[in-house]
Length: 386
Image (cartoon, rainbow, N blue to C red; front, top):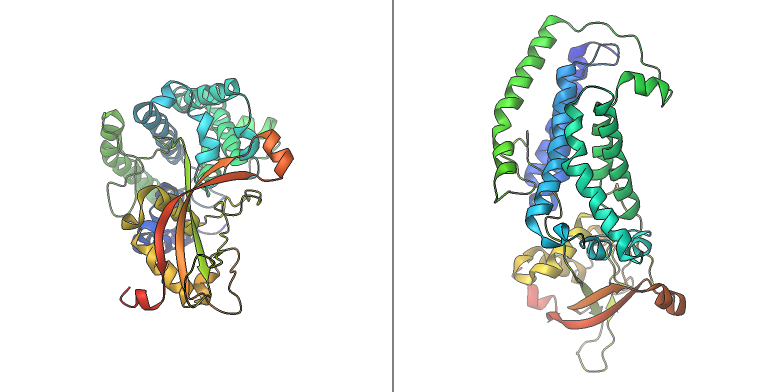
């Protein structure tokens, strides 16, 4: 409620504040859903307060955003990894995704035939159904429902921050007023026409979106398609996509510390437990989304890319050695509450979900195998220059 300019000012302020955070956040804010939130947040500036009729132009701009999210993801899958074309990616994805949730173990242990059905359903929604967002009703509503259903499935089977939740909300732009009233029993409030100056701004927005869409369109038709890329520093009219390739095996880094003054073969090491990533094999994968554990996600990348490509990890270890309380709040449990460790090491493990039989026998959700030493034991003195 209230004047249009007040609504616009509030949304513009929120958008500007988050824009500043994303632009200084570096890799910890470098995810596709950050750009998605910024782009969507900018468009809703032009929806206006509830008492004014929403412009069909803005509605179609939001549908264009949903189309780029879904179709871009569908294209990058078909181009990026043969397992998407062979319908075998879901044999691995529930286990190797960045942060599995409590149901990921169950989905992973379903038959391979079901995994093929999952992949086919994903392809149909992202490559076929999404086009019907631009068709007359009821086709647009059907497309929106299929998109929302596929996103809810992803919400149930994994932790992907707020990406899926946002896509569900944005997909409601495809639902008709009649559908909202008859199926969802949502009453449509009476509205008044927006002033002329507001319509002029909306037309200007549409022209800008059309002009800026050249980059995403060319990217989608390019054989060297980029994934989650912004063509401008303000993150408007971006290109999207996720999991162009699926890892077949899950490697995890485990950070361990000891209070021993000297390291021997008898030294006992205690592991730091993180909020979302697997460490203790007996711990059930937690439900984190729509919250985003940025540190845990970066740990997933670090396990694949190596310590040279994760310089922030050495700084994190230094904070652990310093017993830095704000940093330690980012993890689930600190095994060194009374005294900080003298040394910390990092080891690399291969993690796999247990089978139904193994889960019944051991109670563990994961089984793991030691691979190598990721980082040699270091002390605070070793990291003085970090």
